[in-house]
Each structure stands twice: as C-alpha cells, then as structure tokens.
Amino acid sequence: MEKPKKVALAYSGGLDTSVIIPWLKENYGCEVVAVCGDIGQGADELTGLEQKALKTGASEVHIADMREEFVGEYLWRLVRSGAVYEHKYLLGTSIARPLLAKKQVEVALATGCDGLAHGCTGKGNDQVRFELTYKALAPQLKVIAPWREWSIVSREDAIEYARAHDVPISQTSAKIYSRDRNIWHISHEGGALEDPANPAPDDVWVLTRSPKDAPDTPADVTIGFDRGRPVSVNGQHHVSGVSLLETLNRIGAEHGVGRIDLVENRFVGMKSRGCYETPGGTLITTAFRELEALTLDRMTLHYKQKLALDYAELVYNGFWFTPLRESLDAFFEEVSANTTGEVTLRLYKGNVQPVCRKSPNSLYALNIASFTMGAEYDQKDALGFINLIGLPIKVRASKEGRA
Image 1 (tube, one colour):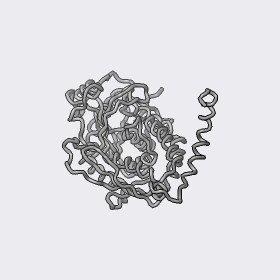
Image 2 (cartoon, rainbow, N blue to C red):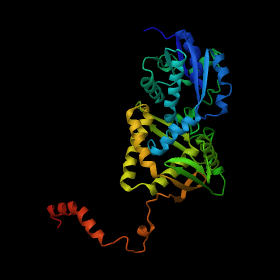
Image 3 (spheres, one colour):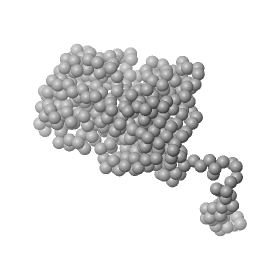
Image 4 (cartoon, rainbow, N blue to C red):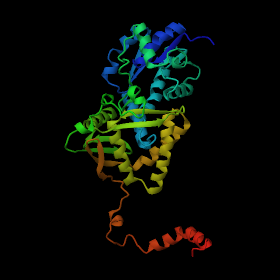
C-alpha cells in the first residue's frame, strides 16, 4: 500500500506524541499536521505547544478550543446517563477521545491529509476509541499507530528516542507517570502504580488536596439542575458549562473530593491499575443521582440504572459515533425532562454527603410516606397486594409439602 504523504497527528505534546513527529518523518517521509484540542487540560500543557510541534518537525499546528463543546455535548450527556464504569470510574479519558478524534478528522479533511496517526499504545483502550471514530467519520484515510510498528517497547525507550532527536519532554525515568488531563479529570498510570500491591505515592495526586490536609470544617455546596443539565452553584446561575465545572472543581479539590484508585478491565482484555481525580465531576454525579431519586418513578429509575451500565461500557469501549449511543441519549434526554431542582452536598475531608434535595417535580409525597397514618394510603390494601405477589411462593410451598 502506498505510504500517506500528509498525516494528521492527534498531538498532546506529551512523551508519546512528541516523539511520533520525528518518527513519522523518518519512517514515512510524510508531512505532519499536529492537531490538538483544548478540552481544559490547562495552560501548563498548552503553553508553547505550537512552537514545540513546529520545532520537532510538524508543518502545521491546529489548536482548537473545544471546552464548551466538550462540557455541553459530551460531559452533560454522560452525567444525564448516570454512567459509571465498574462502580468507580467517571469516564474522564474515555468520553474525551471521540471528540478529539472528531476534530482530528475534520482538520485532516480540511488540510488535504491522506492519513491519520495517534500515540496510543497497542495495549490500551485509546487506540480503539480513536480508530472507531476514524472508521465512523473518515474510513478512507490510512491509520498509522506507531506503537504497533516501531521498536520502542517502553516509556524508557521513548525517553531515549526523544533525547536522541532533541525532542523536549518533561518525563524522566525516575518519575514516569502517564497522565491524561481535561476539565473533567486527570488520570495517572505507570511507574509505581503498575503494581496494584503498591500504595499510590503522594506525588501521584496533583488536582486534589489530601483529605487529611483538607479543611477541618465541613462545607456545603448546592448544585442546581434544569432538565438534567447542571446550571447553578450555590444559587449562582452559570451560562457557561465550563465556568460551572471549574467552580465545582475548585470546591471539590479544596476538600479532597474525587480521588479513586482502580483496578479496571480494559476493553482489549487485560487488567490495569490507575488513579483518577474527578473533583467537580464527583459532586455533579452525586447530586444528580440524589435529584433523580426524587423525580423518577421506580420502574423508570431502575430501568435507567440498567441502561447506564450499557452506556458506561459503550463510552469506555469507544462506541460513541454509533446509532446505539444516539438512541440511548434520546432515552436519557426524555427521562430527564423533569429532573429539575437543587441538591445540597456536605463536603468533609474527601467525603460527600447529601443533606438537602428539592425539586418542583418531586414524586415524594410526604402525606403518603409519613409514619402518621392518613386517608391517602389504606393499609388494608397491602394484604391483597402481598397475597397476590406471594401466590407463586405459596403454591410452591404447598407442592413441596410445607403447607
């Protein structure tokens, strides 16, 4: 097959993508277009990114501010679904990959590229997420995955390659965590974390305070929702989803909220260990779950919880641009039509406790739920209810001679 002449590279400026630019030019002789999306990873990662890419051999650099799109069209959909992967992971990296890959494809088509490249390893989930997006949006473009081709087999090898090619990097052999950050979370993998028997070193955590160093006084935060979308913090309405999430990130991080240490099952078949910090996301998902307890009837809530498991797997595995995801989103949007109200959470040294839930659409009827007996609920009705649902149990007992 003919080698591509111009390749759009999903570029972050990290170790892997930094060495890929000279590697592509050296091994494919192609022009490299670096594509980076600002999804809230912070100025530390974005400052000087264009100059770095050009210095290491890119012919063009495209940096797009996608923060509002990421929050409004991806994260809020995730929140509304209630999806959590394997009880803990709030899908911060997983949910970002389709958006980044979509922008990469758009730039590739606009600049006349005939190839796409990414820095995902052959062991990880991200290669699947990127390439399934490529297949959905530009299946005609050739895909280059250097980690599946080159002789580099470790981060240490990549560091040596970078040094040999004068590529500036921040990683060292002594501190070699692989991190992925956006406005929703930061993930940490590699180094001491690779052995699940090792406690996470203190230097792993970068967003959140250690719970032991968090304020000694609890703090309350109130999050408001409109039709399943977060819209306010402590009564202050936020038109921008980015500003709302940034506010909650600061509050959650101050109180040590949002740390998890997880051994997860990757889509490619292996287990891996990672640490994640999702301060604002933890507050939002906790509040949303509490609000739904008021606004959804039992059957709908329980069925939604089942679909949330499917949605979590779908996002984790990279099937964002599929009819199933779109159909599930339509269901969650309809179900969340009445999920409007406010939830107050109490934060204390890493813990989050709901203390107040209010909604104009609440299905909680105090006159029925109260222990005070009233006319709205006839207790005598319970006898027939129990007799009917217990009929199969009674028949079985009779057949087995227990009656």
